[in-house]
Amino acid sequence: MLAEQLQRLAGIGLRVPVEELPGGALGWRRRVRLAVDETGHAGLRAHRSHDVLPIADCPLAPAGTLAPVLERTFEPGREVEVTVDADDVVHVDTGPVVQRAAGREWRLSPGVFWQVHPALPDTLAAVVGEWAAAPEGGVAWDLYGGVGLFASVLAGQVGPTGGVTVVESSRQAVADGRAALADLTQIGWRAGRVEKLVGSLDGQPDVIVADPPRKGLGRELVDALCARAPQRIVHVACDPAALARDVSLFAARGYRLEKLRAFDAFPMTHHFECVALLVAG
Ligand SMILES: C[S@@+](CC[C@H](N)C(=O)[O-])C[C@H]1O[C@@H](n2cnc3c(N)ncnc32)[C@H](O)[C@@H]1O
Image 1 (cartoon, rainbow, N blue to C red):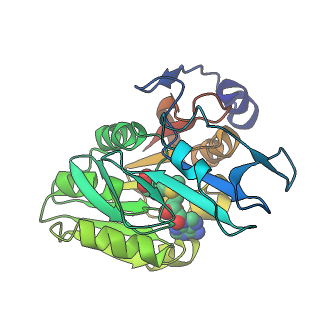
Image 2 (cartoon, rainbow, N blue to C red; image 1 turned 135 degrees about the vertical axis):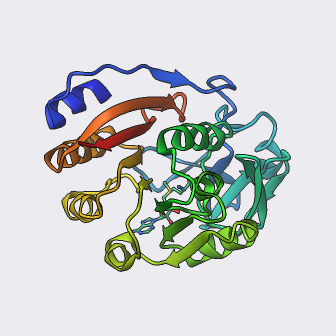
């Protein structure tokens, strides 16, 4: 899929392996949303339907975590979110949930983004850090930054004399990120949409990290980012077509695809996660 989209949308002939993450094909999904039927039992929605099917378990969730939830009854017609935290504690619709990655710890409020595969945050943080290589005393942006997973790594690279700006639309994510990374005073937080705020960000970034939702960046944002002339752009993407389109837009602005990796972050599904390094000149 990735090779096809790169060829079709960016004219790039490149094949990269989709790398396995540790932990195997099952039991990786740390957050599961269930629907509740009219009898109060939680289950999964049938494909393209509102019908709720009873289930005994879900092999994608960590073994044994769903059974106690499936035995309970809930208010009919609602949804139930089950989250397994970094200490394997199972939370049903409650927060905060403790998660750890890149040597740090976050307390996440309900609804705040965190990757569902337990090995992905550390894997992405390592690749993003290696490829961003933000200079000491430099400036880095973490766009669509969530609670600042990548910002925490970038902050270590630029050090106390540098600056990292996180832009994230969820106010709750910004609040949770600020609290978790309060000691990293070189991080500045902006709550709002990237499209709206990017023009008002100060300074000339050495590095931009962008981890947008499925639709990717698109022409206007790619233009806005390239206009700031960063040396490097690290693009994290979960949709290969949107990534290939963005790579082609960056190429038209003089940024070449220098490195690309893909990870099987959603085993047993057709989804996967990519990281691309785009370099000026
Ligand atoms: C794929 S997540 C990445 C979060 C973070 N980089 C991480 O790895 O944990 C995308 C994030 O972008 C935020 N978001 C979605 N649309 C946005 C927008 N238009 N502007 C800013 N943030 C947005 C979401 O709330 C979410 O936290």
